[in-house]
Structures are given as structure tokens and as C-alpha cells.
Image (cartoon, rainbow, N blue to C red):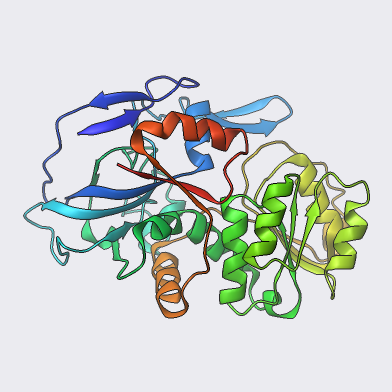
Amino acid sequence: MKSYQLLDYRQPLAPVETPTPSPKGTELLLKIVASGICHTDLHLIDGGYDLGQGRWLSFKERGLVLPRTPGHEIVGRVVAAGPEAAGVEKDKNYLVYPWIGCANCPACKAGDEHLCAQPRFLGLQRDGGFSDHVLIPHPRYLLDIGDIDPKAAAPFACSGLTTFSALKKAGAAIKHSEILVIGAGGLGLMCVHLVKLMGGKGAVVVDIDAGKRQASIKAGAVAALDGNAPDLRAQVQAAVSAGVHVVIDLVGSSGTASLAIDSLAKGGKYILIGLFGGSIDIPLPTIPLRALSITGSFVGNLAELKELLELAKAKGLPSFPTAVCSLHDANDNLQRLQDGKIIGRAVMIP
């Protein structure tokens, strides 16, 4: 089995050949058809998250053991199954739900494995999709994608699921006024598409990159504003017809958080997804006086991914910018992602 693995933090991935595993019990072995590249992979390589004010959340200190094969946006075909695995077919393409929990804690039993305190996420605690094969613990994590192109389906596991779950948290507010989307990378463009598919009024996008702003307009954004504009807050208020009631922040920096909170109308909701890092100082009385909600949103659960996939099958997805590359280009494309040079999503074909 050929994989690209992280052997040490802040180092390029290394090509590694290991014996192809044999599935046991309920396990399944998939030959990977397509595998997406995500900012979470960059955080893994970096070794953690910037918490602001000189603080750092370390993966090593939280028990993540290297080497590790990154990658959690996976479409594959079953090539072998353990004796207790049932209900899958070897001639179908399956999207893999990667946010796997312990199966025993209250969060997992409630169907929210992505919130498990002892996760077994693919590409983090378990080896993931930067490989030609991947081992999956149970058939319930495989979703038949039907006729959807595997390259288009792979980002659903993170980019699609993350934005879909956030939009569901926004509720009916997306139907009454344009939402403000901060960041027009892969998640931002997916969010622009999904808000329309979900019956929303539309999205006003903010990004510092002109190419990504143009891509968001092509994706259907109502407006695309320069994040460096000196009058950005005034432009936001002018672009959103009925006041900003929902902000989805896909960057998650000190600056974007300040923009989000300053832009919200009374009763508005700030949904924070991005993990760029930093901190903010909020005068606490303004939160109740303005009746603001600040909500963190981390990927989504298995039921939401199934719902998203059914939505895509029923309504289709507009053309989404996808840079297709080979597994051997993993490091080059991770660097391009780090440099902000990928518009949409990069997907590897092993």
C-alpha cells in the first residue's frame, strides 16, 4: 500500500510503502478513488492550533501519535471486507464519513460522533486518504454516491458537511436575508452553493483574494467584498438588504471575528468554523443587549452527511472549482493550499 505520511510535525509528507491491511470483524478495505485536500491537513502538519495570546493547542500533547496518513475527504470502492461486515457492494463508489467516535459515549450514542471526546477520525487518529487504500471500521460509515462524480463527492465529507451543518444551525434566518460568508476558499464556495440549494436568499462573501471573490460571484454570491477595504463594514451593511442576521466565518481569525460581531444586527448569530487562530476581546454586556448568539460549528454528524448527499442527488450541485492532481503531488498541493493558490478544492486521484 502506497501512502504519504507525516513522520514529524512541520515537515513534508514522506512516501511510504506498507503491507495492505486485511480487514477483520466489521472492517472494510477500500481502494481510494478520490481524496480531497483540506486545511485540517495543514493543521495536522503544523502540529496544532493557534489559540491566540501566545497559546498553542498541541496535537502531540493531546496524544496524537505519528506517523500518520492525513486525509479525510475520501471516496472509494470496497475490495475486501471482514466476516462481520455486510450491506456493501464491491462495484459501487462510497463516500466515507471520517468523523468516527468511540461509539460508547453520550455524544456517540446521540449520533454526534464528531463531538466524541475520544475520537478516531480518519486522517488524524486513524490513517486516512493520502493513500491508495484505507481501512474503515464499519459499513455504516459508507454512503453510496450513486452517479455523482467521485471527485465532486469527496469534498462532501468535510467541505460540504461543515457548511451544510452550519447552515442548518442558522435555521430559517437564511431564507429572510442574505448571510455574510467570510472566506471564499473551498468551504466558502461550497457554502454559497448550498445556501441556494437549501432555499436561502443568498450570500454576501468577504475575501482578501480577488480571484476567490470572482469565483464566489460565479458560484452565485450576491456580492463579493474585499476584506482589506477600509470601508468594509459599511460595504457589508449596504450589501445585505435586511441587516446581517447570520455570519458564517470560515477563516476564524481575530480580524474576521471582529468583523462578524460588529456586522450583526440585533438577534443575529455568529457561526464560527474557521481555525486560522487568534482571540478577541468582547464587551460582555453587548452580547445580551444585542441578543447575539456565538456558535462554534465543527464538521457535522453522519445523519447530516446522509441528508446532504440526498440533497445533492435530488437537486444536483453547480460546477465547483476542483484542481485534480495525483497522490504524488500531495506536498506541492498542500503548499499551494497554504499559499492560498487553490480556488475551490484540490482532489487527488491515486
